Length: 94
Image (tube, rainbow, N blue to C red; front, side, top):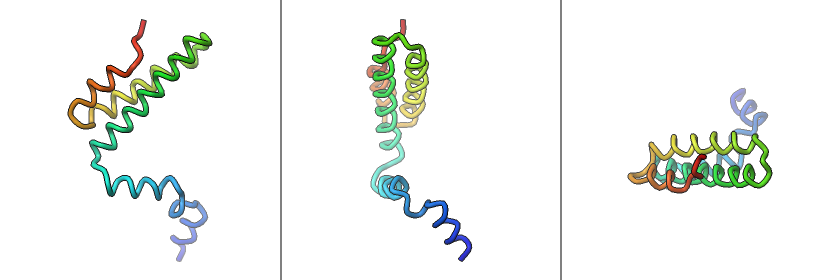
């Protein structure tokens, strides 16, 4: 009973994000999830790099680098070819 009350108070069992994650891990392989996650991080890196180039704000350059690292990390565990695919997506550094 105490566990249920704690879960209810924290909102874990009914969190929309957790419900969606449970469904995702049931229908996709870990490699597929890693590839999709890598692509999302790579897209964020591109968007942050565009913001840096248009605004000159260093926080976006830093964010772009961080997002690119996340993309490569996930791609390395993804499906075959994920790493090469993600590297092609990432902004070129000067």
